Image (tube, rainbow, N blue to C red):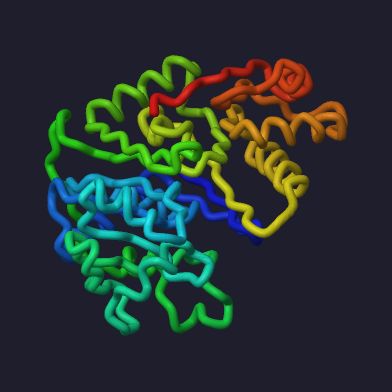
Length: 319
């Protein structure tokens, strides 16, 4: 179901059965810690297997997942979307490079616990903060004495799936409006997520055998996060934090070829960088069935990437 590459190019893969099992265990863990149906849980984890599993776990618990990867302020504006969405629980990676952890750490009880009570008086609705460490971001020197989020989920005894209905709220998508300097929140229920997933499936003629490379922070395009689950295809994701743009595009294309991806969903800046790389790809080379993106891409860029894909589709987010 999911293949993930970290900064060290280590490959992690999970089958649909493993994703389901881990998600149900995560759901049970959240429930045991007080999360109930209808609660809003803000997931601030960076791109990782842990983030995908936690998203599903929150929804299986009947709670509302707030996808917080776009909340990057290091000032009081950080709290605006959290306050607006009436968040009760926050999930964060407690690493020094995390903007979210920088905003949260001073308002937690000082301990080594993986789950802390929030003491922030300005946001009294937030009850607990889950410190879910992303495995590939844990320093090697600390790995033996620290549990990752997957460690916590795997060792939790029990699974849980809450009964939900089509009209029950499922997810809150966060869009940062750069010009207005504020956040826009969009709430979607379970029925909307399923409908959008099927719409993506039909629009791109996706099949279960498709392997999709996706470099979007949430997933397919903003607001369409779980289309690959509805069709049963494999999603390939990666993260590159400290490297040059040229390395990013070369690394991305290498992964697309290595995993034999048939579809790729890339952000417009990646499309622009790919245009210069296309000239260096020797013939014969791997060719995508479909390349998708959202936002404006110039005609010259589309012409330049034509040799690496059979079709190009430009979609626009519903947010």
